[in-house]
Length: 156
Image (cartoon, rainbow, N blue to C red; front, side, top):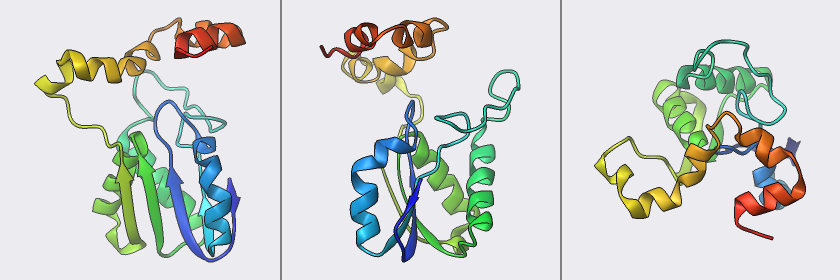
């Protein structure tokens, strides 16, 4: 998704989202003289899904390369990034490897490296969906009907 004119601002989504998570801010930012670019990270939304085993093709360096390729294809010599969750990992790695391309970096809801705090019962209640979405049958269950999606999200 791309909207607006002005200084380029790339919005990177989290997991298991895609560009549309930014739908409520794209238009207002575009009106404020930003060229808002909200891509799908590799393997998310309508992006290509590499046909490789395991995590191959979905490594952090693959996502960083995709972002660099996107910036080059769009002619963005310098731009800002707003990111969260998995997108924040990509943004930070991009900043470390290509700092000359960034005019600004903002990230939030950034995952932390595994630690004993990850196993705390209070923390696990907050991230249950991450384990759920990795189950082989999760997509079939959630995608089977609106009712199934509502009951798994805790809403009705």
